Length: 442
View 1 (cartoon, rainbow, N blue to C red):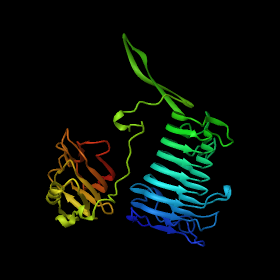
View 2 (cartoon, one colour):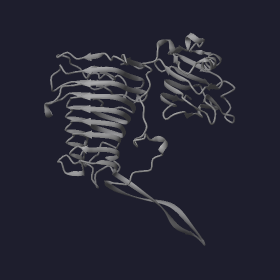
View 3 (tube, rainbow, N blue to C red):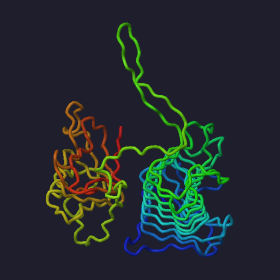
View 4 (cartoon, rainbow, N blue to C red):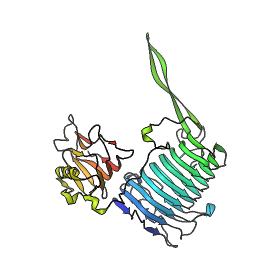
């Protein structure tokens, strides 16, 4: 995969990419090729702009001890969505197959993935990542955390696996996992749900942090344990809040300054590994069942073709030179609630505020650029900043969706507010942005 590569299958009938029995390679799809000697095509932290969605990746015809569906060594502006990974099942330690092999990188997002079989469903090593709605079925180990700074799992489901998450890399000497957050998740019939080597004197001090928030272990044997099966947190229960790592307690200390007594904020810290009281959660963010609200990034696969309105078919040039402000505003003003604005790949220059109505859905082809012209009189005054994209007016309710679009400045724009969001959703989850990147240039 080169820069600006998207592989998109049919969302309603995903195609299958299947390895032959004699296939040899790092993965059916490779996001960052290795040269002989170990050098990569792209520096892993700079490996941007990749997307794979709507596929079935199958390596079940390969030998039990070998094979990866996907080599995903990526950084920002990358995503995986709606993919099934099929691997050989069983075989114990002899099973060397992996759904995702991720050895390095610098952050991204993945959603709606299913892993069937394999020695390791997902081998993860990356600086920071967000992953939601991942399901693992009949894996030897569902997730092996090789290293991270911060990894957040939301709605993780692990079914019939020997190990759910292995975060033991580095042992107690050097914890390679910085921190791991697992929320609104379920471990079903898992022998050891989470394995750790954290202790009160493991290093680094903040390494090995584990936060469990509303995680169900009622049908699993062990919730959290050491590799030798010494139990830290037993299974057979639903855990509202468990913390492993460094905790801080805030207080106010009295200090004398002459005759004046002042109360100065202070904090103490200590290392804990225990069930704690759950944190307060704003009700507006929760579903009726008490989980955090979530939804998949829209693909509009059920929207008729006739309801997609092409930007370039409606007077926008997207050539990086022409001022598209008037044409873009005219397009937004005429689109109806049941239509989706489709920004064809290009660079759309704007020189004044675009007023986004309360019912707009917009998505892009290969991350089109909406470029804010910093030389325009609207955006060049530091003391009089103006919004480039103004979504609704204060107090408005509506349903606005933006996805797969890049907003960036065209030269210095000291008076630009890139986006002003005034809109509250008319229903839960009705308004939001997904994979909409904000980029700044000198």
